[in-house]
Length: 276
Image (cartoon, rainbow, N blue to C red):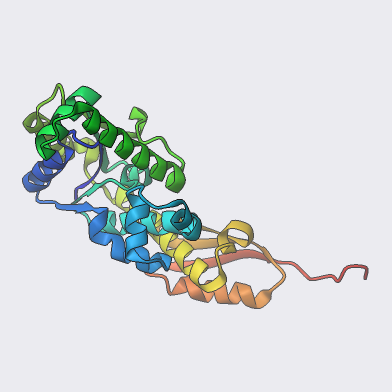
């Protein structure tokens, strides 16, 4: 199954490229607007606030109210859920960062110099003043970069994050589509049982984090327990004074979709009252 993660700058004709690639390869073409409802539901937030946050348009008050860690966690899980279904092109919202360690995923960046982008935006929107177009592009770039920094702490413009970077000022849209389709069909990005297993382990870990947050609160994996997943089998490590918590955690994870077994290596520490 084919999985492509793409990030594009505004007014680079990246949307046309994504549509062309998806059509050629028979892929679902997904942008975050399509799945914002699912992310909002998992994060316990409104769909509109999640939309503005992912677009980099949230106000200071909205950013303060939203749980950034939870939004990042839920966004990553949604990306992994989509990738696991396969035959999908995922545009934007950190997909290239979340999926870049998986060898079967083709990560693509579409970019162009600012002068080219000004021209594209002016033609697209009927803008007559290049300064207005440039301001809109710079605002969009800053918002996008800010969102990626807040969610994942990454510079989305770093070329080392991608398998291929395409400059549409030099490479026509049709040729960009051909390059991406050719790579996607190559053996370098063919899914194997091993790479499929790695993807599923990442997805299971994301589901575990969500389940632990829901059941025990956001600190359960950060300061108490740690989960490791290999071939669907989960190992829990950490330490606690609460034996019941260990039992509850194991039972919880046994019910997480995709989990094939749970082994607890959590150390039970006897509570000794201070001064005794």
